[in-house]
Length: 158
Ligand code: SAM
Image (cartoon, rainbow, N blue to C red; front, side, top):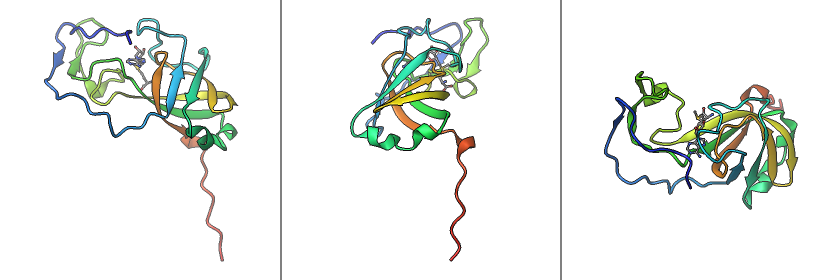
């Protein structure tokens, strides 16, 4: 799928890497958004952004039980359409160089993206959310309730 340029920008540094091995990750669905190219996509999602669909593959729909108690959830996804070999990057194309781990750029050795999104509703095994910033078809890795909303129950006393 298209959507990204892999050309090096001024002063960027790439390293030689073996072919990526993603075999240990299990994608659990796909994210459907209005954006087909990186240029159209917001850099970070906004709670006022458009409704996007998080479509789980079977058998993971059953794993959503209880999630609709949360207004805010965290999504982890695989930014599958960028290069992975840069140690230094020029994100603004303005000559300012940053180390990959000083950025939230999609260009990284293990391209995991995270967003705290607003859960609008659940439709079967699909979540409708606002606040995403990924390309249409981005693979989904995980879903977690917002950590601030999680209050562990005290263990029962005998
Ligand atoms: N919110 C996430 C985070 O902070 O980890 C991702 C932030 S990253 C700056 C968002 C940008 O990644 C988008 O503006 C787009 O340029 C790019 N992007 C989105 N989906 C992608 C995909 N599937 N593959 C590669 N790049 C993607």
